[in-house]
Image 1: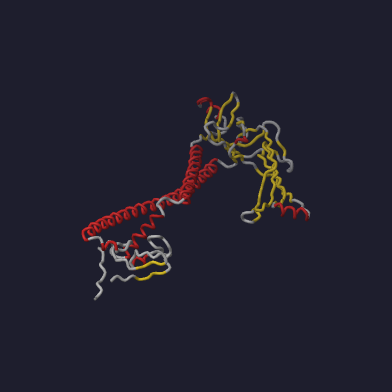
Image 2: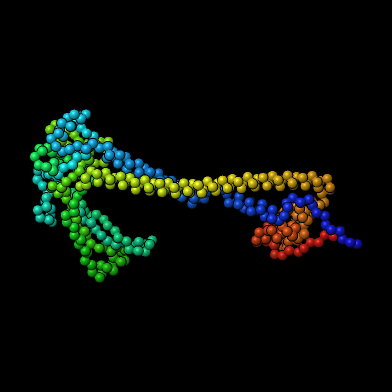
Length: 380
């Protein structure tokens, strides 16, 4: 008797390649489309930093615009008349240039002879090396251990003598920019014995020395003042403005001071734009990943619908033909006839093509036990 060929079930998929495509899409979907924790943290940090930089840029731009709009007044005999005509005898934000002159006694330098001023700042700064346990390097460390500032009342007077008008400078230490000249600076290195050196290496701190500095605003210094100019009885005063604008007492002329602020604004603007582009790039990457994930889900859903329809059609055909062929169909592709015996579990559930397509390490689709070897099955 001649053995008849085994009956074949109706095909549901065209080839093992189609089955591998379904498996690949399913594996991609298992990764999920939501951004990872690192990506979300990167986006949040980049957005927060961009917002912070933009806030600083807005503040700097506001300061520059306010400085551009400040009213320039001359320190001459007409200044009193200008303030009398101003509302409330006050110019809210004015620019005035003059020369420093002491009202009463002057401050003398402790280290330089014949050096007189109206503001004196003495600073002691400690310098040392600190061991960084993370980078394993010695880093420079500076700390102000003592600072004292002495002031005496002073006026701004015209550079040309004989004008007879002065402006009293109020609260000079509140200025955002106060130009002090360094008149004395000396570094006192620390003296260490061999025992001290060993102790410092063990403790992770190596003292280098103390730096002593004296800064002064000397009498006769040309100064540009930017603030609120007010006529109080017979005294003209320059004081910190009330609208939150910065108060300046700078040795620069007004044009140089304005140029410095505008350069600062450009720097923060460029920094904001760069980090803004970086944030947009991260957001684009995450949205692109979400879009690709959405397309894969839609494609997988379409393939699952087609597979389910084909399975229902096969069920109807097998119910009509008796169902014997379906019992012998591969449980993976439902197209070919079962032709493999998996050992050691003994299940007969797959065709040869689907067994080859199983991912490594190969496991039985029924019991998930590892397949040690395969025995061909011959139907007669």
